[in-house]
Length: 457
Image 1 (tube, helix red, strand yellow):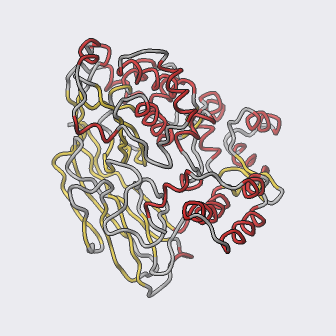
Image 2 (tube, rainbow, N blue to C red; image 1 turned 30 degrees about the vertical axis):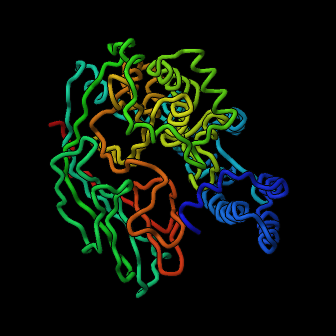
Image 3 (tube, rainbow, N blue to C red; image 1 turned 45 degrees about the vertical axis):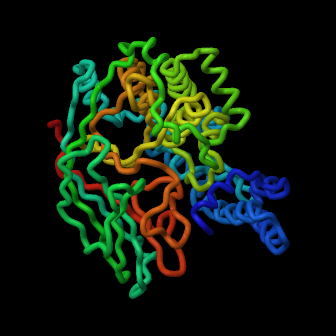
């Protein structure tokens, strides 16, 4: 299946497949799809059904917890947590689940979501605050308009295979993400790459990687160690001259960030209606973008979601279900901006605060007379939830320097491309691996981040 065939995820599933799928009858859904694929079908529908066979596998990997398993996880942190409380959270849509062959199964990451998103539940654990927001508050409160701040980041990232995924003696192909000296990154030094790579991405790569070809063996570690400085310039968006925003023209090179990109940026009737309702007749693009940011950060819940490969339209998923993780929220913001004539694009990489390194996604949007500005929807949402309105305002227009920008666009291929479908077909912050005859997915691959030195410059 070609990488560009991802756009066929925008094709709706036939009704009989949908009925079996969401009734939890996965085996019957597979049988229906397999029968359909034996006949003559339009190319786009054939691609959609082939994708669905993979999506059913992905869903089974994501939803593995019984109710008893799920309750046990919560009670490890809150011993007195009741079944009635659990049922109420599910009723409120705060616990993600599906039916699978007659049983309700829960998303593996549901417990982490509860404690990350809902401060009242985390307080009941008595384990202290899970995130060091005081560091961000200290940084943000001291900034003035136009000021630049930099963070020095020295990190080692590792990729290994789970023991059961190692096929000794077979050729293994690995792609690991790597930053380039762009998007505020300077003084980049590649300290070590082990083993020796086959090739490294060029400067124009949208999703840059280091590519390895090795013989698989037990205990094998693929690692990249690098250091860099990441610099951001603070813009106080409340001080932007709104008249200049209205009268300035969009540069030609921003126009390509105004269109659809199927399947996840679709100007569907609902996205158009939502954008129009939120804008409320406002003509100024900066104020429209702020309205979109406010809606996503204040009205949708941050939530760990199932693998992106299992969701047909990430932006509309967030708009319909009023929930999503950092990437899902960012894509909704990008879709609302683009359908409203505001250039918007994707950026992602690693969050790299001292003691806390991990994957993260955010958005950028173009403000006439100002230029490209940031919008970090998930950080904005967590700030709003905690009543930290200064931090909430900061993440409209800005990001902090504690991050490593890597990917400049989503839904782009590697160079060289993978032979089999991607673990994450839309983005890459962790890395991917495959053999010559099949890909590796889910728990087959293990990732680790080792903080060596994070400090403000």
